[in-house]
Length: 464
Image 1 (cartoon, rainbow, N blue to C red):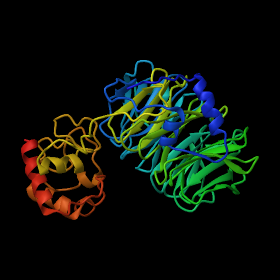
Image 2: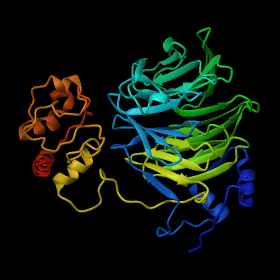
Image 3: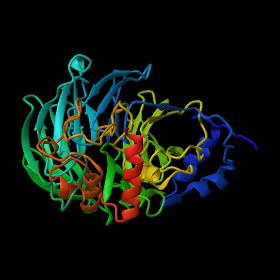
Image 4: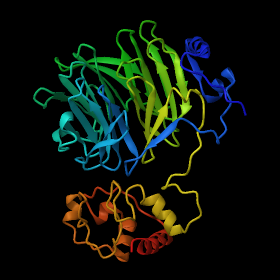
């Protein structure tokens, strides 16, 4: 097996630039593979990839500050602050009441904004993160918070939500300036301020990118109309162009001067889920639902990388300030850290083990049901391990909402349910929304009576 290495300044990259500049080019893994003659690397070769372990659930958001902090947000209701240099944990923020989807630093790195499935937008003082992690709540949306973004000077901040509105915040007094649908119909996925801070660009489920006049409170019309939902985008006002990722699997570069698509990359019907740009705005990275990451230079729109970075969807991406590291978040509990200098292959499919909630090893049906239905949120150990739900250790005979150290919803606190074979069977027969209205527990039911019985049998033994 031959391993061909390339580096960022390799002459082969010039070939890629010329190819990608052709209008409307559609690239996929096989085209790149045969175009450059790269071979899939043998699974026994050690890659420059590290796992940063800390969360107890899938990683939903990532952001890097100019001063060298990385913040990861998770399905486990927490945000972790890391030192980029040493990748050690500096603080754990647990103020949200549901999955935390997004985080963003202010331009001066003095404030950190987070938004989550609890529909709330929180703000932290960065210099106090390691001392006191208590947050201030700016306000809330009508649905889950999907994106947050600051204006260039940091005076304004915008948050978008699946409830169909954008809220623009005055960050001097941390008050709401205005709330608008910006002309969209349905969920709003992403936001970006114009360079002068007078306008807000927004993208949504309705397949459009729109421009909104903030201070006159009116829509300036549609910038892009795609047909399928637009999940992420970046508008380069100086080059009069936009790069956006869609629910039908396309990454598109559109040139407004020429009024045409200049580049199209992607996997058909595989949604593009996330995007990041380094703080110097030299490189953009986009990730899709099958683990593929595409990196493009913002200087000349050439392809920098195209590789599979995760097993399953890529929900979060962040680039180190010098673009030597790419941080990837997805269904795994850990952050994948890819060294882009010592891992230069542009096309590769890395091997890896099955996840704990999608097991491949032989096991009893009850254990399999726990792995698939419960292990994303719960552990069986005395330590809850930062999971979204409380540990199930010694759960039988325990009154709901009473485990010390876990932040329960009011529905659980007020409940008189005692967990036993009957109540757990009822929970998965009728569903948490029926048994415990108002609970944070995801709505799920188990149709098979045998699966419920086997799960309870396994839990009774495993939680003793």
